[in-house]
Length: 304
Image 1 (cartoon, rainbow, N blue to C red):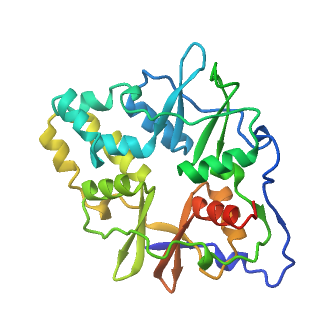
Image 2 (image 1 turned 90 degrees about the vertical axis):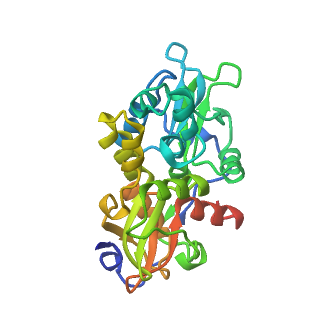
C-alpha cells in the first residue's frame, strides 16, 4: 500500500481564511464547460466506456450526429450494470444469447439514461437544486427545451467552492459508514455493490486498515476492454467476473485527514480530477469524502 499524503506538504501553519464560492445568483454559462465531449447513439458501449476513461467523465451526453440534439446520457454506472453488476446484465442473456463480445459492441442507446438538462438561460441555483434533488453529477446545457441542442455541460466540479479556508473540517462532512471491499472480494460482487448503491469507488481494507481503492473505471477497464474483448463464451465471462479485487485495485491512494478544512479537499479535487478521497488516521479508514458530500453540505447551510 502506497499513500500519497498531500497533508504534510500543505501544512504551512496559521493562515488567514479567505474564501470564494460559486454564487447561487448568476447565469449557468458563467461556470459551464462549452467544450462538450459527446457521442452519438450508435457508438458502441465499449467505445463509450473508453471515451469516459480517456476524458475522466462518468456521464457523457448522447446527441444526434446531425443536429446535436440531446438524446440521452451515457452513464458509467449503467455500463457497469450492463456488464455484469445488475439488472441490465439480463440484456446480454436475453438479446445476445450470452455473447459478451456482441453485447459490448452494441450501441449505447441500448442502455443510455434519460437526460436531465437545463436551458442556457438557467441560473446556477437552478442547477444546484437539480443536482441535489436528482443526485446527478453532470447536467447538459441546451439552447432551448424544444431543440435541445447541446451547447455546454455543467458538472459538480464546476460549482465546487474554492478558497483558502471555510472553517469546516472534513469530519463534519464525510461519510463515516462507508461501504468497503476486501482483497478477496470478487469483481462481480464489487460491481453489484457499486450498481446497487450508485457508488463510484470502494476503499479496500484489511483489518480496518486502508490498503487500496477500486473505482468504477478500474472495473470498466478490466471487463469492458481488457480480457473480455477476446471472449465469446459466456462461461469464460463468468470466470473473469470472478477475478479478485487485489488483482485490479489501485494501491496508491490519495487520502485526507478528518481535521483538514474542506477547502483543501476542494482544491485537491480540482488538482487531481478525483471525485472523492478516503479519510484516514494512522492508516485506519475513518470514512470517505466526495464532491457530492461537500456541495450538499454547503448547499444545505446556504454557503453556496
